[in-house]
Length: 198
Image 1 (cartoon, one colour):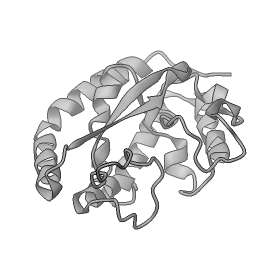
Image 2 (cartoon, rainbow, N blue to C red):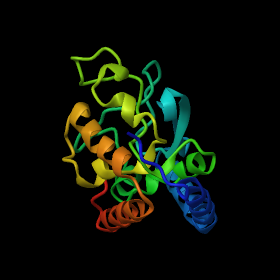
Image 3 (spheres, rainbow, N blue to C red):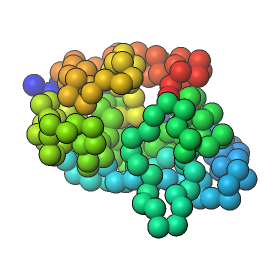
Image 4 (tube, rainbow, N blue to C red):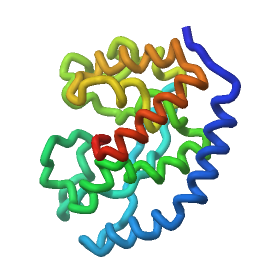
């Protein structure tokens, strides 16, 4: 059963618009910092699965080194002390500032502030499953918009496998409310201020 509340989309729209306007100076400095480090593009876009399994492109500030010629785009999975992460990228990740462009996705209605994280198409480490929709819990979590943060991001262990992460996601799907969203956003801000987001 999917629980919904009417204020969610208006709240997402108004807050994303306000934060976009307030954060414009940060966008300028972050863009310059990324470019000065390796003269590369400041943004990184990736196709993800969203509401109802529909695809959209997430937007983030680039935190990894540019791939060498002949090498594919950034892999989705990264690990602790990943050498691909730039110096600026490390700061952006632990403070969640790399997620700022996601405000555009929220404004467009492709994402929400709170919800399950948008998924890439591959299942990487989930070798038991050939596709995402084979993983238990995927169908239920796909009935809400993906979010910048959620119960799994705040409370689940960092290295939890996708099947168990879906269990956290689906707790949110069944229990979501305006107060719960505010609480999870607040906890996410605290994590970012402490440099523990990554």
